Image (tube, rainbow, N blue to C red; front, top):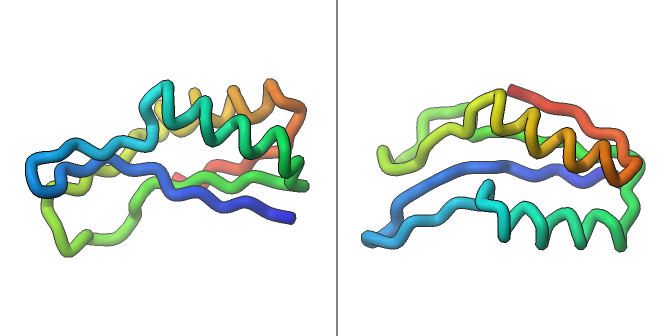
Length: 80
């Protein structure tokens, strides 16, 4: 099993959405622990979004998230 996850930050109807927050990442890591995928692939948004309020997550943020995946003993690939 391969898990692919897109990380992004956005403001939608004056509500901030951020799946890189500590709470969101911890919940996601919990799912990875249960699933135990062969590899985890993480991405930022890489194309122009139809909404200008969508922000690309930095490579350094993806690296921090990847380190947490590796700490679980899982293989991770970053596509930045």
